[in-house]
Image (cartoon, rainbow, N blue to C red; front, side):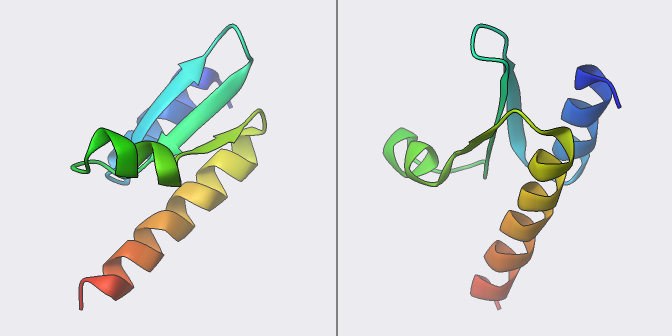
Length: 67
């Protein structure tokens, strides 16, 4: 899977995601938070599958907290 398609899939889940080229890592976090909170929960990984799985888990945990 390409970087572009991975980022598109993460964004389709409702996440904020970036590719940090200088580090070769994805940065995945939840949207709509303060900068401090967003960075506190941000997840960094160089693995595509890990980024997608962790992003999906972030959404699941966030939705459980919203119920």
